Length: 131
Image (cartoon, rainbow, N blue to C red; front, top):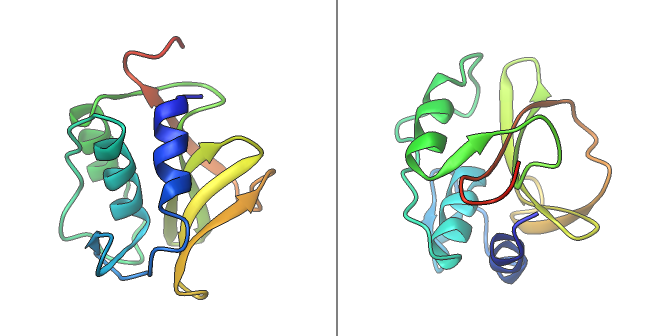
């Protein structure tokens, strides 16, 4: 687990939810949460743009994750992509004891204790972290 990324994500708990949100003052969605946590941890995120809330394709996440300094890993990823519904994917950041994610229904970024209630499709680690 990346301590810097986890600390950054935990610092965003309570931030308002906003679909396609990229500014913590105005609100973040799950993509915005990951991008802002990466930025706060010293990275240069390249988040996907123009994605739909519901989609079966995650191709744009793959390209953007690599460009953002993330590399695919088998387990214990810093960032996880979950399938929360048949056509809806969701990103979360791994932190001690659970995950931070942007919760649309609650209207804010929240902490979710482990384990995740959804199947994990992909996981990434910061590229400079040991796999």
